[in-house]
Amino acid sequence: MAARDIVIPADAGALLIVDLDAIAENFRRIKSVCTDTCVGAAVKANAYGLGAGAVTRTLAAAGCDTFFVATICEGIQLRKTNGQAKIIVLNGPEVRSLDTMRNARLTPTLNSLAQIDILSKNGGNEPARAWLHLDTGMNRLGLNAHDVDALCADPARMDGIDVMAILSHLACADTPNHPMNELQRATFDTLRARMAPLTGAVSASLANSPGIFLGPSFHYDMVRPGAALYGVRPSAQGPNPMVQVIDIYTKILQVRDVDTPMTVGYGAIHRVGGPRRIATLAAGYADGYPRAAGETTGYMESSSMCAYINGKAAPLVGRVSMDLITIDVTDIPTEYCQPGQTVELLGPNVNADSLAEASGTIAYEVLSRLGPRLRVEYRGGAV
Ligand SMILES: *Cc1c(COP(=O)(O)O)cnc(C)c1O
Image (cartoon, rainbow, N blue to C red; front, side, top):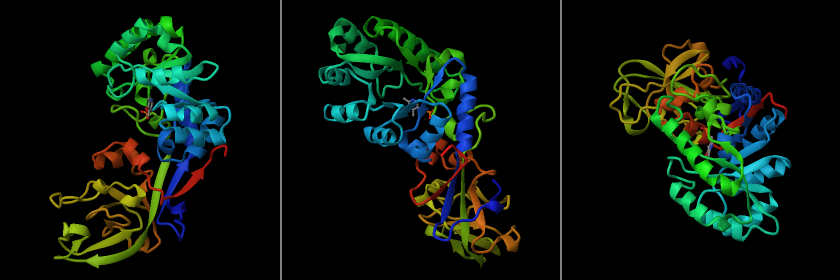
């Protein structure tokens, strides 16, 4: 999308453009990487900040029928717009949420012996469907080898539970050569084999986005991409095999000339070394633009991050504040440095991965923190 075609609405500071066709394309690319495997989509956290409604409609139209959410509330929202989808709640059930989950036809993930006991004792008249989470090395959620032994010694604890699938989650999949990957895969196979007498032969699922690119031995029956669908680079190495999904544009509010010994922004940390022109932009960290992308300490001469005006780089100067960003536009022709001028914060010249890297975080966090104040515009899609 060329910045010159983008106009920021008068009543908004910044525009988030979500390309739904790009999400559908990324879904197809993942399908082509794992041909004999189902592709379920992680749409937790409002589909990583991009809008769960539009994103799930797009993915459903592309052929996706299984969606992973973190919380029951996210599952209920999704159920309102999609009667058919299989919705898996990763955080699992509590006693007080069983009725709610059943009514919305949400499938719980069982992450502990305690959650197994909750579901088996309160499953209603027919067996309650669930996914079972095995911990193979993350040590956050899931049954470990010890828990699996306890279950095998007392199989009746699984009464009333109909296990649909078994999943585990990879810790280091974005580092292809990391020994954890094979270790976790082997542990997954061992624990599944021990569970087989209790569950029967059920589907298995191990890979998140980066796991998909570790090769077919990690695909099993279903893969669970989130980030890659939204254009995030799934591996630390090599070119990004996904297409970019989001752009963020803001506009210039004011342009001013400054000279030494003036400073720019909070903390007066950016000292102007000579005559410069500064443009103030109508977005800030309240919109989800990382504060750490700007200068923060004053020890750095400048931020490594730039905004782009008609494709020309303008470095961030001073701190990113809640509603405003200041950039140095001295080298940009004056005609493009007027109030109202569209400025790219994320787009053809800056992707979420590079913005995240300059901010000391990962694109997952940048996406999921996109602020509610951003005006959202969807392009394409079957909506
Ligand atoms: C979030 C999540 C995913 C998706 O991970 P990505 O790296 O975004 O593809 C898959 N599985 C589980 C259990 C998750 O929590």
